[in-house]
Length: 449
Image (cartoon, rainbow, N blue to C red; front, side):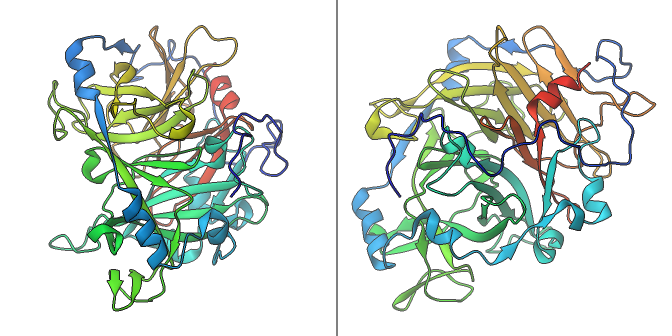
């Protein structure tokens, strides 16, 4: 891929452009909107509370640890060289179904208010598997201003393996894979699976990465995802996609070749960001937080990575915060300063417990950033809620006659804002009700009354 001085280019994309004034997807529930100040029984999380203490800052501090370039080059050389994003997209083998081909149950999982303007469903096998769970999404709209990776517009969807039927954890438990979706033609999305791995033995071998993939952000040529159990972050280089040449259930070197649990492509980690305060702990007020979801905010200067604490006790407050990306030309897509430290640029707590997705964005006419917080329902059969928060308070859409805030999707992953098109992208995660969908952020704001 060409390295771009075009990172800040404002050329408008052609395909995958949101038709913001178009007809929304038809849903069965009719929305009756009122402001949250009028709602009853709202479970309103209220305003954000800023965290400014030294101890709070130390709990959020990370340290960068990068894999040696020699080890990465050794692995690339042994596996026949890097194929890159274009190589994967040129070999897609799954087709996503357009809205009309989604089932009634899949469409029923979409938001009631605001309604999605576009939605896609996975192929039949992926839509119904109970062992793999979709968790996170990021796009080439995060990666570059023009929303393109070379000639492609791309959506990445992260899935993790969860064997809820097993009596004990299996070796597949926690495996992480990403669907590389070619979205250049919005009417014909296709994808290919890529397994996440970590180099070992000086690059002569690799092992599977175990991650809940609660969040991920593609920025410039790097992909940052949540690590196993939310303990830290892993970083990947999108130039270093590799092809496995052995088709078996093993992960790593097999004889003279390499296998990836039956998947054709792997993406090896190039490093990690680890909490300097030690291992994360859930459910303790002064603990180092475990990472839950991630997103990108292009409305800050410099651009920033937004994070939310992994869901713990749903009665506790949730921490949300951001890290600034490096502006050094030789550190594209990385977070740390020259000493390898990563400090939070700002941090807050919210009463919105059990957060599944968080997004921060400041519009041109706003005096401060607005934080969008997604909360799934306690019940797997009820829609979740989406709150917009500032320091002054919180708002959410209200729908149905009982004035419920359960208007967002049924199950929800992390968020990604495609700045060029104005769309918020996310996905649903319930088997047989899985969809990848977009909602204009302006519609989210408009639904608040």
